[in-house]
Amino acid sequence: MFFELFIALRYIWSKKKSRYMSFISMSSLAGVALGVASLIVILSVMNGLETELKSRLINMKPHATISNKDGIEYWENLSNKISTIPGVTRSMPFVSGEAVIGIGDNLKPVIIQGIEVDQGPYFLEDNSFFISGDISNLQPYSNRIAVGYALAYSLGLDIGDSVNIMIPSVEGGIPSAKIKTFLLAGIFEAGVLEHDSSLAIMNISDASILKGLRGVPTTIGIYLDQPLSIANIQDQLLNFSRNDYVYSDWSIENRSYFNAIKIEKIMMTLLLGLIVAVATFNIVASLVMFVTDKETDIAILKTLGIEKKSILKIFILQGSIVGISGIIAGNIIGLFLAINAENIFPWLEKTFNFNIMPSDVFYISVLPSEVRVFDIVLISVISIFISVISTIYPSYRAASVLPIDSLRYE
Figure 1 (cartoon, rainbow, N blue to C red):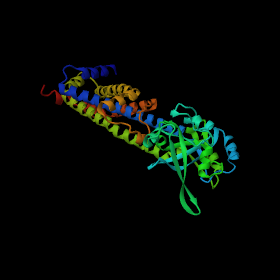
Figure 2: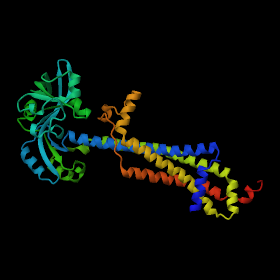
Figure 3: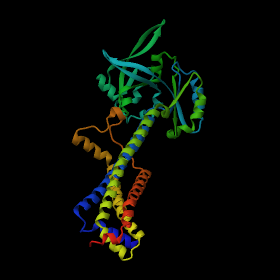
């Protein structure tokens, strides 16, 4: 093996090798490196995107809900029973519904959410998400409201402004709108455009009065210690949702969205994998040309008693070294780009004046990246396998060279 490796390395680094052959070899190496680096970066970004979106979407709302638009009678008993389920950290009542918010003719659709101030959604448990105002301002019967920064900007609102909230109602069988005025007491930035542009928070007492619910909540929000493992207790939670209750959780609400991300991840992997495949064809082409160029050397080696399998090993090693070198280079480049993606991509956006991650599409404006060891190992192993397989045909052709034909005119 050491003899074959020595000859293979001599062929790779030989100064007598033509410039064209050197260019083909280096382009093969560069192609493999580019393909591997691209796969690592794209998979890391897609992993980061999926994790970041899950984290943000999970923290924005209760992990699961049981609701009834007409209100949940005896909700305290139901909430206490739900809290006994292993894995449930707490359950809380709130009132939610669709409404219209605005000043004058400037109207926007909004989701109102009435909460108990001391038991608000996780992202509102402290004031770190508030740009202006304070969550403690949302006291019972205060007629105060907090909205996302994007919604406030679109309506031209500031702290202390009065806004009208309109909800649909039916009086005497005639559809109408119930209008109530609230004072803006807070502006928050949740980090998810859906909430920043269409969510309004108020005290549960005010929301209940607004919807005419006689003080009962429309929804029980359920929080888990392991929200990503919600499938383990879904059946238990479903037992509490009778025919007149509707059960939902974060995985159900966002199923199609995360399925779309997985499909995009698979398609991007397949498309970028073609770069590695094309690069391996370059390895095949370079080895075929190299074998043709070195037929005399091969014939001499055979004349000196070198076995056919040794010739086979020489050229398999030569092609494999080129491929593996490209894979190593691709890993280094890919890991560097993936680890520093949060700094590199903003620089690219600023330099070339384009937006890689539109916040209205992906809910986030910063490109996340999450490097997973499994992905790196899988990409490397598959790339090595393809690179080695691609050397078999030209190596077999080299091993089949007949000395008498190659040396006849030498």
